[in-house]
Amino acid sequence: MTQSLESLLQEAGGPIPLLRAHKYDRADARPEYQPQQIIPVLPQEFSLWEHETRAWREGVALFDQTHHMSGVFLEGPDAQRLLAEIAINDFSTSRPGAARQIVCVNADGDLIGDGIVFHLEDQRFSAYGAGFVQNWIMFHAQTGDYNVEAVYDTKAPVYPNGHANTRPDCRYQIQGPLAGALIEKLNGGPLGDVKFFHMTEMTIGGNRCHALRHGMAGAPGLEVWGPYEHREAIRDAIIEAGREFGLQPVGGMAYLIGAIESGWYQAVVPAIYTSESLRDYREWLPANLGEGMIRLSGSQERADVADYYRTPFDLDYGKLIRFDHEFIGRDALQRRREEPALQKVTLQWNVEDAASLFAEMLTPGGRDVRFLHLPAMCDKMDKHYDMLTLDGREVGNSAYTAYTANERSILSIALVDETVRVGDEVVIHWGEAGGGYGANVVPATDVVEIRATVSPAPYARVAREDYRR
Image (tube, rainbow, N blue to C red):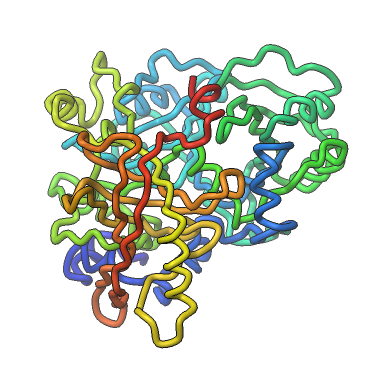
């Protein structure tokens, strides 16, 4: 029998020792969580990651989303009611043919996670994302008073053949300024006026596919999904049609850079580890899912895991809250909406300080620093919390970091308090606090101070002025 998250927490001696520990040798880890990577099954590069990065800004890029996201299918008379009662946003007006973000909190108003819900048909939905929300949905579908069937669609550990997997759909994303021309060619004519986050259908490689209109890093595009068994035919058809436009498939190294350009804060530590009211959830939740496999990393050291929790207001999700219906955390969010919230920003690293970090990495016998991975430090399941200071005063945390060839800059997504302004110079305390339990301890490192300029999120001008508008 699989160990529960609650029993694993007891074994580790609490949330902080568990989250600060490495997980690479966990015997109970599911295949898709070994190694601890967000995109473990995608080739690192198809050409060069820097070329792939420029594709969604200058031409057209193809992202393979078939394998790495978890999903849940909900079907039944109470499917819509279930979503409405666990989400801060209102699902009562959802109609087939549209999608919307779902954001879930605990009873105290702290974030559990977010994802995307597709309203496929009457009484039928799918939800995809990092997994925290999908697990939350499954728990309430199985334990709540709902007439609903929930089926988990687990991420796939094998690429590209996937013989061990029978996912219902393959999923591809076409993005970039030339995406519209490619999509029209694939469709054999104009797709029509499809509203943002609305769905349509099109035929690709002889297979009827669904499509969702959205964008990434300011670039227009489409997410398409079709029968899993025809994934290669669909992908080959997109690549063949895209040769005319210089289509560039995107590998795992470049995949998450667009998220940082877009200002998407990947995820915070889910607020499930401490509340006694969530003990039933932790006892239901298998320890070998993401909540038991993530690692808390960075220099911001706290004794209480709740200090790493965040609210929807901190991530600019406050505008999604609808208080006109009952949902988990509603009363707490009403009380907390007047509290000072953090603000999401982008940090542009100082060139000299970034270069000095590389110099440390190249100096034999030098300081024991945390190395910088290029192009992205968000390629693992770590939840990053590096301390940020302004004039010697702690003002928040820096999180996911990447180098983008589009901006020729190292960027970090960060959450800062209300005293920080765009244009301020803050200091990222780049390092690893370490920690863990038993044989699973992660060593601490020296801390390197990196100056960074506070910039808007999204960082990309086109994302701020076009896509986000």
